[in-house]
Amino acid sequence: MIPPARRITAVCVLGAALAACGSADGARHDRTEATVSISPPAPRPPVLAPGPGGLTPVFEHGPRTLGRTVALTFDADMTTAEGPRAAAGEHFDNPDLIGTLRALKVPATVFMTGRWADEYPTEARSLGHDPQFEVANHSYGHNAFTDDCDGLPSVPAAEMRSDVARAYASLRKAGVPRPMPYFRFPGGCYDRQALRALNEVGVTAVQWDVVSGDTSAKDADAVTRQVLDEVQPGSVVVMHCVLSTAPTTTQVVRTVVPELRRRGYRLVKVSELIGQSNGHR
Ligand SMILES: [Zn+2]
Image (cartoon, rainbow, N blue to C red):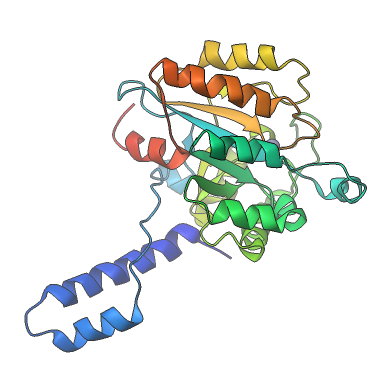
């Protein structure tokens, strides 16, 4: 089992202890050990506090009143059944989209399925090592965490934790060193049982408040209009990093990003909005 948040907490606690050692007079021995054996701890990603009964918290958007920020998020969907189609040349990745985000210097959060990371490890690793991006968890094979979710096959309740763990294992195996403790439910479908099943995993569930409608879209202008009409300060926009099923997304980004900037929006990663949200609405 991977409790990412706990693991990161442990590193931070250790780091704090070492910093205290280093500042204490006469603790030269400890300071030397700290310098040679421990690199600075990575900052702990912000998470929401659990809900009542320890229920997995759900994040939908950032504060509306702390300035114009917006997070573009990209789901890297892939199912186990799509493996043969990828082998036959169908693209469930979208290198042009990632290249465009890099060229436009857009910080972004990618919710990656484990199956996608298995298929495209080089791209997963590249995203995982680029500070412009953060990579989070979108299940292993994009099965739903409720019984009735837009026709998706479902994960039995008893297997929900292990599905999320399997996805984290695939992300790490592909070379994503620090996947974020954020989980996006496939199809956005969840209920109390699903939130309870992930209680001990330590993730914040991340939804959205703006649906781009890029899945199966043919008309980039319609998707662009929908995003621009619905964005508010603190919005989380859901888009896709899957050329086969979301072929207009790169074009949408090319138009939406300059327009959002013209309107005074700053593009941020989900972690920044979650960090802003502690204590704010
Ligand atoms: Zn998805």
